[in-house]
Amino acid sequence: MIDPAWKRDEIDSPCVRICVVHPGEGICVGCYRSPDEIARWSQMSDAERARIRAELPGRAPRLMRRRGGRAARLGE
Image (cartoon, rainbow, N blue to C red; front, top):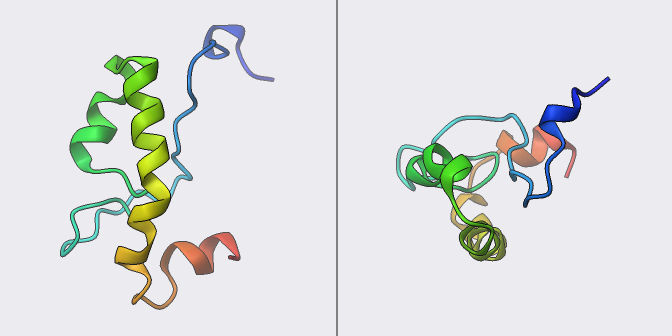
């Protein structure tokens, strides 16, 4: 059961619990956010979170050369 304190009206984190920052690209292989975006997520406005969420799919191709990784773990 989820504690009601954690159910808030805000944009959800894109975290998929694969928290590894790619050394060459500088983004998380799970959610495609930068370390700075991950660290600041809880302090960001909804507008800033929405902007970042919209950018994330465009970052995915930067990591497509890897075998395994996010796609293998999530069954994509």
